[in-house]
Amino acid sequence: MIDKKLVRERFRKSLSTYAEHAVVQNAMASELSDMICRSCVERSFGRVFEVGSGTGALTGELLKRCRVGSYFANDLVDESHAYLKKVFERFPVGEFGFIDGDIESGGAMPDGLDLVLSNATLQWLEDFEGFLLKARRSLNPGGMLAFSTFGPLNMHEISAVGQTGLAYRSLETIERLAGRYFESCECREEQVKMEFSSPEAVLRHIRATGVNGISRRYWTKSRYLDFLDSYRERFSSRDGVSLTYHPIYCCLKTTYS
Image (cartoon, rainbow, N blue to C red; front, side, top):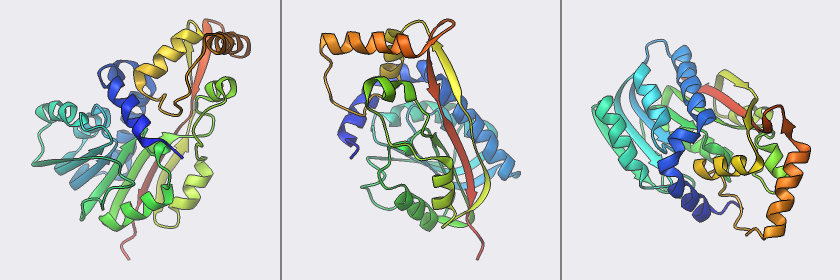
């Protein structure tokens, strides 16, 4: 079970540092927005709902490229609202609404949507298929669900050494579940290997992006030192040590039937 209180707590602490350190997630927001544009050449949406808006990286990237009438956003951390307001100062929309809280335990999404989108968030969901069904019910015929998430190799170094990690879904699993409710426009995956000077730098990076909301286990000094030594031994690279990200991108559409 994912501790949503812990996830909220860690992401809240990292809001001020996220945009600077979330290099991969920022690139994912840009790529996902390009993918949406490839699947909707009109680049225009009446009603949009974003899940896991965070500091507004995806919000800004989409609004750079597309016209939006009404934009609704959700995040587990209510302070995300203030970051989004700054984005909308640069990219005005006709209507903006913010819904804070857990998208899984909350009520239905806004209805009559043309686009539901999410960047680097859905790996935190317990019931992924339930989310797909909720999105399908809220989308208009021909509407689009576009998201990025992470696959099983994501931060495998951390799970190998620290014996903790999320149960990431594979692209094949995502496509199989999504195929029950949507037609696929484009789905793909990639691996991005980042280099850090030391295991300590890896841990600072993880804290700065808030993705350490997996476990409340506390580190003793000996366990911490063992972690650093094991990480260096197993994942040394030319410039220090490596950390792998495994982004998955999906762009799906509802049918008109």
